[in-house]
Length: 340
Image (cartoon, rainbow, N blue to C red; front, side):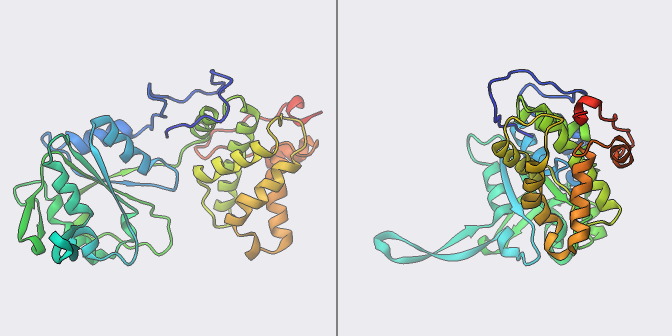
Protein backbone atom coordinates (compact mmCIF):
# COMPACT_ATOMS: atom_id res chain seq x y z
CA UNK A 1 0.00 0.00 0.00
CA UNK A 2 1.13 3.58 -0.58
CA UNK A 3 2.86 4.88 2.50
CA UNK A 4 2.41 8.27 4.14
CA UNK A 5 5.24 8.87 6.56
CA UNK A 6 4.49 10.12 10.09
CA UNK A 7 8.08 10.68 11.20
CA UNK A 8 10.39 11.86 8.44
CA UNK A 9 13.51 12.30 10.60
CA UNK A 10 14.71 8.78 9.94
CA UNK A 11 15.31 7.57 6.39
CA UNK A 12 16.09 3.91 7.05
CA UNK A 13 13.78 0.96 7.55
CA UNK A 14 14.66 -1.37 10.42
CA UNK A 15 12.57 -4.42 9.54
CA UNK A 16 13.80 -7.59 11.19
CA UNK A 17 12.58 -9.55 8.17
CA UNK A 18 12.49 -7.30 5.07
CA UNK A 19 9.47 -7.54 2.76
CA UNK A 20 9.72 -6.64 -0.95
CA UNK A 21 9.27 -2.91 -1.57
CA UNK A 22 8.79 -1.44 -5.03
CA UNK A 23 10.71 1.58 -6.25
CA UNK A 24 7.57 3.70 -5.91
CA UNK A 25 7.42 2.97 -2.15
CA UNK A 26 4.60 0.41 -2.33
CA UNK A 27 4.78 -3.05 -0.81
CA UNK A 28 4.92 -5.81 -3.43
CA UNK A 29 2.09 -8.27 -2.90
CA UNK A 30 3.15 -11.89 -3.56
CA UNK A 31 0.31 -12.49 -6.03
CA UNK A 32 0.42 -9.12 -7.82
CA UNK A 33 2.48 -10.23 -10.86
CA UNK A 34 0.06 -13.13 -11.45
CA UNK A 35 -2.85 -10.71 -11.19
CA UNK A 36 -1.28 -8.38 -13.79
CA UNK A 37 -0.67 -11.27 -16.18
CA UNK A 38 -4.21 -12.65 -15.90
CA UNK A 39 -5.75 -9.18 -16.29
CA UNK A 40 -3.68 -8.08 -19.28
CA UNK A 41 -2.08 -10.95 -21.24
CA UNK A 42 -3.52 -14.34 -20.34
CA UNK A 43 -6.29 -14.52 -22.94
CA UNK A 44 -4.34 -14.12 -26.16
CA UNK A 45 -3.10 -10.72 -25.05
CA UNK A 46 -6.55 -9.46 -24.05
CA UNK A 47 -6.66 -10.52 -20.42
CA UNK A 48 -9.58 -11.93 -18.46
CA UNK A 49 -11.99 -10.32 -16.07
CA UNK A 50 -10.50 -11.00 -12.64
CA UNK A 51 -11.95 -11.29 -9.15
CA UNK A 52 -9.58 -10.85 -6.21
CA UNK A 53 -10.90 -12.90 -3.29
CA UNK A 54 -9.60 -12.61 0.24
CA UNK A 55 -10.00 -11.15 3.73
CA UNK A 56 -10.07 -7.49 4.63
CA UNK A 57 -6.69 -5.73 4.24
CA UNK A 58 -5.19 -8.42 2.03
CA UNK A 59 -4.54 -5.71 -0.59
CA UNK A 60 -7.34 -6.42 -3.10
CA UNK A 61 -8.54 -2.87 -3.77
CA UNK A 62 -4.99 -1.56 -3.50
CA UNK A 63 -3.92 -3.99 -6.24
CA UNK A 64 -6.62 -2.63 -8.60
CA UNK A 65 -5.43 0.92 -7.94
CA UNK A 66 -1.80 -0.11 -8.46
CA UNK A 67 -2.66 -1.91 -11.72
CA UNK A 68 -4.30 1.24 -13.11
CA UNK A 69 -1.31 3.35 -12.14
CA UNK A 70 1.25 0.86 -13.49
CA UNK A 71 -0.54 0.73 -16.86
CA UNK A 72 -1.24 4.46 -16.98
CA UNK A 73 -4.98 3.72 -17.12
CA UNK A 74 -7.90 5.63 -15.64
CA UNK A 75 -9.64 4.01 -12.66
CA UNK A 76 -13.44 3.83 -12.33
CA UNK A 77 -14.75 2.37 -9.05
CA UNK A 78 -18.17 0.85 -8.36
CA UNK A 79 -18.91 0.06 -4.72
CA UNK A 80 -20.98 -3.09 -4.37
CA UNK A 81 -24.00 -3.03 -2.06
CA UNK A 82 -27.19 -4.97 -1.51
CA UNK A 83 -29.57 -2.41 -3.04
CA UNK A 84 -27.68 -1.69 -6.25
CA UNK A 85 -29.87 -1.23 -9.34
CA UNK A 86 -28.92 -1.67 -13.00
CA UNK A 87 -29.28 2.09 -13.57
CA UNK A 88 -26.31 2.66 -11.28
CA UNK A 89 -24.18 0.69 -13.75
CA UNK A 90 -25.88 1.55 -17.02
CA UNK A 91 -27.20 5.09 -16.49
CA UNK A 92 -30.52 6.94 -16.47
CA UNK A 93 -32.41 9.59 -18.37
CA UNK A 94 -32.48 12.88 -16.51
CA UNK A 95 -33.68 16.46 -16.91
CA UNK A 96 -30.90 18.99 -17.41
CA UNK A 97 -30.78 22.71 -18.17
CA UNK A 98 -30.51 23.50 -21.88
CA UNK A 99 -30.13 26.76 -23.76
CA UNK A 100 -31.83 29.66 -22.08
CA UNK A 101 -32.35 27.54 -18.99
CA UNK A 102 -35.06 25.47 -20.64
CA UNK A 103 -35.21 21.89 -19.33
CA UNK A 104 -34.17 19.19 -21.77
CA UNK A 105 -33.76 15.45 -21.47
CA UNK A 106 -30.22 14.24 -21.01
CA UNK A 107 -28.49 10.99 -20.09
CA UNK A 108 -26.46 10.46 -16.94
CA UNK A 109 -24.14 7.49 -17.64
CA UNK A 110 -23.66 4.81 -15.01
CA UNK A 111 -20.25 3.61 -13.89
CA UNK A 112 -19.76 0.87 -16.50
CA UNK A 113 -21.10 3.03 -19.34
CA UNK A 114 -18.83 5.89 -18.27
CA UNK A 115 -15.82 3.56 -18.11
CA UNK A 116 -16.49 2.24 -21.64
CA UNK A 117 -16.96 5.78 -22.97
CA UNK A 118 -13.66 6.80 -21.39
CA UNK A 119 -11.81 4.05 -23.26
CA UNK A 120 -12.36 5.80 -26.60
CA UNK A 121 -11.60 9.34 -25.44
CA UNK A 122 -8.52 11.08 -26.74
CA UNK A 123 -5.63 11.02 -24.31
CA UNK A 124 -7.04 8.08 -22.31
CA UNK A 125 -4.79 5.03 -22.51
CA UNK A 126 -7.31 2.66 -20.97
CA UNK A 127 -9.60 2.01 -18.00
CA UNK A 128 -9.50 -0.34 -15.03
CA UNK A 129 -13.06 -0.87 -13.77
CA UNK A 130 -12.97 -1.89 -10.09
CA UNK A 131 -16.19 -3.49 -8.79
CA UNK A 132 -15.55 -3.51 -5.04
CA UNK A 133 -17.31 -6.07 -2.79
CA UNK A 134 -19.01 -7.61 -5.78
CA UNK A 135 -20.48 -10.48 -3.75
CA UNK A 136 -22.74 -8.07 -1.86
CA UNK A 137 -24.70 -7.51 -5.09
CA UNK A 138 -27.86 -9.45 -5.90
CA UNK A 139 -26.85 -12.38 -8.17
CA UNK A 140 -29.51 -11.45 -10.71
CA UNK A 141 -27.91 -8.06 -11.14
CA UNK A 142 -24.60 -9.60 -12.15
CA UNK A 143 -26.34 -11.39 -15.01
CA UNK A 144 -26.58 -7.99 -16.69
CA UNK A 145 -22.80 -7.83 -17.03
CA UNK A 146 -22.23 -11.44 -18.14
CA UNK A 147 -21.92 -10.43 -21.78
CA UNK A 148 -19.33 -7.80 -20.93
CA UNK A 149 -16.98 -10.54 -19.74
CA UNK A 150 -17.45 -12.93 -22.67
CA UNK A 151 -13.99 -11.98 -23.99
CA UNK A 152 -14.99 -12.74 -27.61
CA UNK A 153 -16.98 -11.04 -30.38
CA UNK A 154 -20.07 -11.25 -28.13
CA UNK A 155 -18.49 -9.20 -25.35
CA UNK A 156 -20.79 -6.17 -25.31
CA UNK A 157 -22.60 -3.73 -23.03
CA UNK A 158 -26.09 -2.69 -24.12
CA UNK A 159 -27.52 0.71 -23.14
CA UNK A 160 -31.15 0.81 -24.36
CA UNK A 161 -31.61 4.43 -23.26
CA UNK A 162 -28.97 5.48 -25.82
CA UNK A 163 -29.90 2.77 -28.33
CA UNK A 164 -26.22 1.92 -28.22
CA UNK A 165 -24.25 -1.29 -27.90
CA UNK A 166 -20.68 -0.90 -26.69
CA UNK A 167 -18.22 -3.59 -27.74
CA UNK A 168 -15.72 -4.31 -25.01
CA UNK A 169 -12.52 -2.52 -26.04
CA UNK A 170 -9.09 -4.09 -25.59
CA UNK A 171 -8.08 -1.30 -23.19
CA UNK A 172 -10.88 -2.08 -20.70
CA UNK A 173 -10.00 -4.26 -17.67
CA UNK A 174 -12.68 -5.62 -15.34
CA UNK A 175 -11.60 -6.27 -11.74
CA UNK A 176 -13.88 -7.37 -8.91
CA UNK A 177 -13.04 -7.78 -5.23
CA UNK A 178 -14.82 -9.86 -2.63
CA UNK A 179 -14.43 -11.08 0.93
CA UNK A 180 -16.01 -14.55 1.23
CA UNK A 181 -16.04 -14.29 5.04
CA UNK A 182 -18.41 -11.33 5.16
CA UNK A 183 -21.84 -12.03 6.57
CA UNK A 184 -24.83 -11.81 4.22
CA UNK A 185 -22.82 -12.21 1.02
CA UNK A 186 -24.40 -13.67 -2.10
CA UNK A 187 -23.01 -16.66 -4.01
CA UNK A 188 -21.90 -15.61 -7.48
CA UNK A 189 -23.66 -17.50 -10.28
CA UNK A 190 -21.89 -20.18 -12.28
CA UNK A 191 -22.65 -18.26 -15.48
CA UNK A 192 -20.85 -15.20 -14.12
CA UNK A 193 -17.93 -17.13 -12.62
CA UNK A 194 -17.36 -19.07 -15.86
CA UNK A 195 -16.29 -15.79 -17.47
CA UNK A 196 -14.02 -14.73 -14.60
CA UNK A 197 -10.64 -15.75 -13.22
CA UNK A 198 -10.51 -15.84 -9.41
CA UNK A 199 -7.23 -15.05 -7.64
CA UNK A 200 -6.97 -15.90 -3.96
CA UNK A 201 -5.43 -13.12 -1.86
CA UNK A 202 -4.39 -14.45 1.55
CA UNK A 203 -4.27 -12.27 4.64
CA UNK A 204 -0.96 -10.44 4.95
CA UNK A 205 1.44 -12.21 7.26
CA UNK A 206 2.93 -10.46 10.26
CA UNK A 207 6.12 -9.53 8.41
CA UNK A 208 4.15 -7.75 5.68
CA UNK A 209 2.18 -5.88 8.34
CA UNK A 210 5.43 -4.91 10.06
CA UNK A 211 6.89 -3.69 6.77
CA UNK A 212 3.90 -1.47 5.97
CA UNK A 213 3.74 -0.05 9.48
CA UNK A 214 7.52 0.47 9.54
CA UNK A 215 7.42 2.48 6.33
CA UNK A 216 4.53 4.58 7.54
CA UNK A 217 5.80 5.11 11.09
CA UNK A 218 9.52 5.74 10.72
CA UNK A 219 11.53 5.64 13.93
CA UNK A 220 8.78 3.83 15.89
CA UNK A 221 9.90 0.23 15.45
CA UNK A 222 9.07 -0.84 19.01
CA UNK A 223 5.51 0.41 18.59
CA UNK A 224 5.31 -1.18 15.15
CA UNK A 225 6.36 -4.57 16.54
CA UNK A 226 3.82 -4.32 19.36
CA UNK A 227 1.03 -3.39 16.94
CA UNK A 228 1.89 -6.22 14.53
CA UNK A 229 1.90 -8.70 17.43
CA UNK A 230 -1.44 -7.34 18.65
CA UNK A 231 -3.01 -7.74 15.19
CA UNK A 232 -1.77 -11.32 15.03
CA UNK A 233 -3.08 -12.08 18.51
CA UNK A 234 -6.49 -10.55 17.74
CA UNK A 235 -6.80 -12.74 14.63
CA UNK A 236 -5.90 -15.84 16.65
CA UNK A 237 -8.48 -14.90 19.30
CA UNK A 238 -11.08 -14.50 16.53
CA UNK A 239 -10.29 -17.95 15.18
CA UNK A 240 -10.69 -19.28 18.72
CA UNK A 241 -14.16 -17.64 18.70
CA UNK A 242 -13.34 -15.16 21.47
CA UNK A 243 -14.80 -12.45 19.23
CA UNK A 244 -16.00 -12.07 15.63
CA UNK A 245 -14.16 -9.02 14.35
CA UNK A 246 -11.70 -9.65 11.53
CA UNK A 247 -8.66 -7.42 12.17
CA UNK A 248 -7.71 -5.22 9.26
CA UNK A 249 -4.63 -3.19 8.51
CA UNK A 250 -6.56 0.09 8.23
CA UNK A 251 -7.75 -0.18 11.82
CA UNK A 252 -4.28 -1.13 13.07
CA UNK A 253 -2.86 1.95 11.32
CA UNK A 254 -5.52 4.08 13.06
CA UNK A 255 -4.64 2.43 16.35
CA UNK A 256 -0.89 2.93 15.96
CA UNK A 257 -1.37 6.52 14.82
CA UNK A 258 -3.51 7.31 17.89
CA UNK A 259 -1.10 5.52 20.24
CA UNK A 260 1.87 7.33 18.69
CA UNK A 261 0.17 10.69 19.20
CA UNK A 262 -0.65 9.85 22.82
CA UNK A 263 2.76 8.35 23.66
CA UNK A 264 5.28 9.16 20.89
CA UNK A 265 8.37 7.97 22.81
CA UNK A 266 7.15 4.53 23.95
CA UNK A 267 9.84 1.83 24.06
CA UNK A 268 9.72 -1.87 24.87
CA UNK A 269 9.84 -2.54 28.58
CA UNK A 270 7.87 0.57 29.57
CA UNK A 271 4.23 0.73 30.64
CA UNK A 272 1.52 -0.36 28.23
CA UNK A 273 -1.26 1.46 30.08
CA UNK A 274 -1.62 4.11 27.37
CA UNK A 275 -1.58 1.45 24.67
CA UNK A 276 -4.34 -0.43 26.52
CA UNK A 277 -6.47 2.72 26.73
CA UNK A 278 -6.12 3.43 23.00
CA UNK A 279 -6.79 -0.24 22.28
CA UNK A 280 -10.10 -0.04 24.16
CA UNK A 281 -11.16 3.11 22.31
CA UNK A 282 -10.32 2.04 18.74
CA UNK A 283 -10.10 -1.75 18.56
CA UNK A 284 -12.37 -2.59 21.46
CA UNK A 285 -15.25 -0.80 19.77
CA UNK A 286 -14.83 -2.97 16.65
CA UNK A 287 -14.46 -6.20 18.58
CA UNK A 288 -17.72 -5.32 20.29
CA UNK A 289 -16.90 -4.40 23.87
CA UNK A 290 -20.48 -3.29 24.55
CA UNK A 291 -21.86 -6.66 23.48
CA UNK A 292 -19.33 -8.58 25.57
CA UNK A 293 -19.52 -9.11 29.30
CA UNK A 294 -16.93 -7.15 31.25
CA UNK A 295 -14.80 -10.10 32.47
CA UNK A 296 -14.52 -11.53 28.95
CA UNK A 297 -13.58 -8.27 27.25
CA UNK A 298 -11.15 -7.32 30.02
CA UNK A 299 -9.63 -10.78 29.82
CA UNK A 300 -9.10 -10.54 26.07
CA UNK A 301 -7.65 -7.03 26.26
CA UNK A 302 -5.38 -7.93 29.17
CA UNK A 303 -4.24 -11.11 27.42
CA UNK A 304 -3.19 -9.08 24.38
CA UNK A 305 -1.40 -6.53 26.55
CA UNK A 306 0.35 -9.25 28.54
CA UNK A 307 1.40 -10.98 25.33
CA UNK A 308 3.23 -7.78 24.40
CA UNK A 309 5.20 -7.71 27.66
CA UNK A 310 2.80 -5.84 29.88
CA UNK A 311 3.69 -7.95 32.93
CA UNK A 312 7.11 -9.13 34.04
CA UNK A 313 6.10 -12.77 34.34
CA UNK A 314 8.01 -14.84 31.81
CA UNK A 315 5.97 -18.04 32.28
CA UNK A 316 2.66 -16.24 31.78
CA UNK A 317 3.98 -14.37 28.75
CA UNK A 318 5.44 -17.50 27.15
CA UNK A 319 2.08 -19.25 27.57
CA UNK A 320 0.46 -16.42 25.63
CA UNK A 321 3.04 -16.24 22.85
CA UNK A 322 1.45 -17.35 19.60
CA UNK A 323 2.54 -18.54 16.20
CA UNK A 324 2.13 -16.40 13.15
CA UNK A 325 -0.88 -17.01 10.92
CA UNK A 326 1.31 -18.87 8.43
CA UNK A 327 2.67 -21.16 11.18
CA UNK A 328 5.93 -19.30 11.82
CA UNK A 329 6.68 -19.15 15.53
CA UNK A 330 7.37 -15.68 16.84
CA UNK A 331 10.56 -15.22 18.90
CA UNK A 332 10.23 -15.02 22.66
CA UNK A 333 10.60 -11.61 24.24
CA UNK A 334 14.00 -10.86 25.75
CA UNK A 335 14.62 -9.65 29.31
CA UNK A 336 15.16 -6.14 27.95
CA UNK A 337 11.87 -6.24 26.07
CA UNK A 338 10.11 -7.43 29.22
CA UNK A 339 11.65 -4.65 31.28
CA UNK A 340 13.38 -7.12 33.61
